[in-house]
Length: 223
Length: 223
DNA sequence: ACCTGAACACCGTTCAAGT
DNA sequence: ACCTGAACACCGTTCAAGT
Image 1: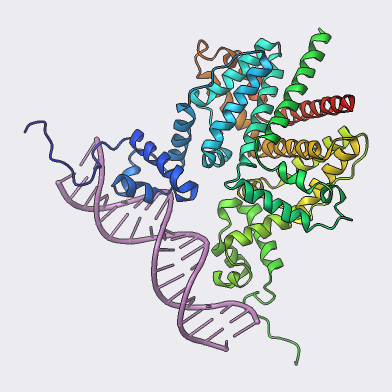
Image 2: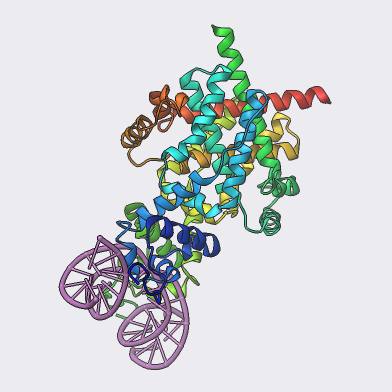
């Protein structure tokens, strides 16, 4: 009975950053951002709220670690084809990842994460752009543009219930006076369709890549 | 002394939705989103927290009204030039407005607002696109793309302290191993520059408009 | 070293009561 | 009709104490 320890009544034995983060991710996915409180997290683990503060200074630090873990764990998509195809697939992959954890997108708004794990994606994008012939400054701007568009698409378009979002849009547009809002009043179905699904994202992505191609052509001609 | 009322010790006489919203906007701007609590808001007005619940069912309804008021009060930019110039100026105006109230951007993430006041902007964008020759479905997608990009630029790029954001990016990128992150390691200054200022927004906007021009040309050729 | 208990200063919100 | 007071069920976090 030297190394055998009696079973703990609470499962609080191997408390660690990893264990806390795993439980937080689980809670985040099940209950959403609002449901992720220090007290509820502690309760789930079977421990007092204060125990968490041994491992994280405060809730902010815990949240940082949670997003970081989530971002770092996803394996990058394998890419092939020309630079446009590769960038498109990278952004589609990013969008899919973000849509899987929409709560984490909100979290990233207030805290830009620049851990090595998070920067793998940036590195991949920059590699594609540099190899395609973009100057470093242009590549950085171009990546930033793609990033902002893709994150924005999820942040401002990941509706829990797409059908309801469409119906709400239709209802809101139907209320408008056709005299004051002629363009919208004549495009109610089209505007509603632009609120959900892959269509608007693919349209914007294609626009952006066309625009980037133009920039590349202009610069090459200038040399 | 029939109509003259004794001065109230607290200034709670003309409590109304408008007065509450005005106080909430003030508090939001001074203390940020976290500082806007029902209790603090009530205190500022000189009233009990419960008094607010006569005018709004709950905090969510109050927040909706607050954003709506803010969005509706800004006069739209006056636009001139060709459609590209008009759209660019509209998005620049939107970005300026959003940057003036970055807290409200976070609020709009969870609650899509489609009040008539908020839709004036959409109407303006749709008018420009339809007049330029875009089909209704394309115009809706195109507007959505511009909207998502502009909102995303502010949501993911409105740093309270731009210099600090740049320094943090440089610090994070300097930590990376050049073997694993060759593209980023060779573009540290450029990547940091892409995090702040007007440069990345203008680059992305120009990209998008070029891409939209291409779409328009293709469609016109197809007809 | 690691966790607990009690406490503090906050929340949003309900419900009964005051005027 | 409009506002108040007291209360409830939550928060994040500090600090002293237990083992």
